[in-house]
Image (cartoon, rainbow, N blue to C red; front, side):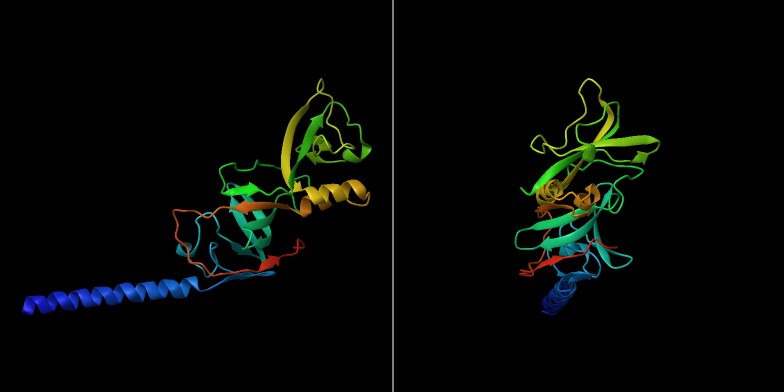
Length: 230
């Protein structure tokens, strides 16, 4: 009888520890991420006061100096300009291109990331050190990276006022950057708009929740947007 009592007491305390742990986890995951203009973000994101078990492993948000939110994708850091929980979309902008479209180093997009472009995204290609100019003066701008001239930009074949350099005189390097199609269309209509304006508006991605990581639902419905001014 004494052994049975001891076993029951042991099971009782194990259950207490389990429920206390679950209660603590629920309490931690009830905390929402807020940084600058990005406010009250819960599952499937984590970061700040929200521990890793509260979200997907790929969706860690960081609050940087001057209160702006970033997310790391591969080797690249992106400014988080907006999050739409309902549509599972984010508006991102590359930190290395913000306010300076001529960075010292440009890395490619990580194709293994849990993000896919939305239909409103279009590729913008930058051509480095081309041996022939493009057909549009507007597509030519001064940009020197490690002594190399950035001399052309092309969106796609339908972007008629910007054409690629002659195939017989190729460029040394091309870099493709995702941008909003609406921003490119405005750039085409408005001559006061610059390439930097287009890049600064960022691009939209649809995120996928990691099935291997359980995350608590917070039933959030809001859309939040942040300013690019940092």
